Amino acid sequence: MDFEKLASAMRRLALEAGEKIMEIYGADDFEVRAKSDASPVTEADEAADAMISAGLLAEFPDVTLITEEQAATHAQNASTFLIVDPLDGTKEFVKRRGDFTVNIAYVENGVPLRGIVYAPAKERLFYTTADGRSVEEKGPFGDQPGVTSPIGVNPLPDNRGLMVVASKSHRDEATDQYIARYKTRDMASAGSSLKFCLIATGEADLYPRLGRTMEWDTAAGDAVLRGAGGEVVRFDDHTELTYGKPGFENPFFIAYAPGVLLVKQEA
View 1 (spheres, one colour):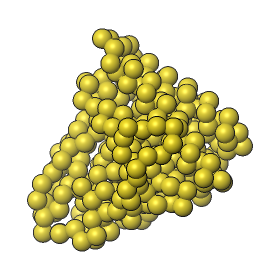
View 2: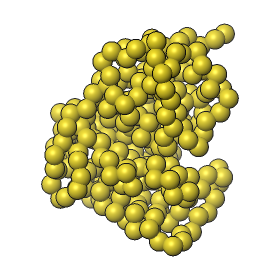
View 3: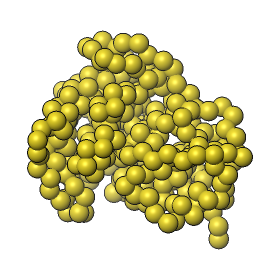
């Protein structure tokens, strides 16, 4: 893979999709439908998916493409692929809470090597550079990258008082019980893949997810977090979370800064 070309293409397509999403977000009304799994989908999801898919297929025609909104892509079996969630956090979008993101990632042999997470309503843009390091770019965003700052996880998180981030729309009792096993100094709620990015920037230390997610929900944020020195592991055995699994469904997982002492699962 030409990582210079990939980084440029992902940035351009994420920004273009974000612009379209915000155009629809700013409208007085927009259509919301339920998919087969009862999750919501809007015209913004579909428009962003079409834009990103067309761009990636034009730039990388020989790389398998998997997107949330195109079920026909889900059955493909490949060790190397691009994976897209054009609008992660649709519930946040519908409720006009701003915590939604555009996500594009490149996976090779089960590992998300490169990724971009763009939160257009919050004007925050996180991505891995061609050499795999993670940065945050400051807006306004133009055709060429602007001012970027390297990001990194909190190198010495205090296990006597961790900053924990959890889902806004999917918080449950099991998650709260797990978090209660740590000493926390504060907690934050965030939607979509922004939770990975908050750990990547050192704004949070721990994100446990005890609920259903798909690989397109997590791959880009996972790549950004890994490029910032963080880790994502399975909840059950603390082994690395991998990609390209049957059905592209994730197990429960924990994203964290490596200095955090993870609590073992109770028997």
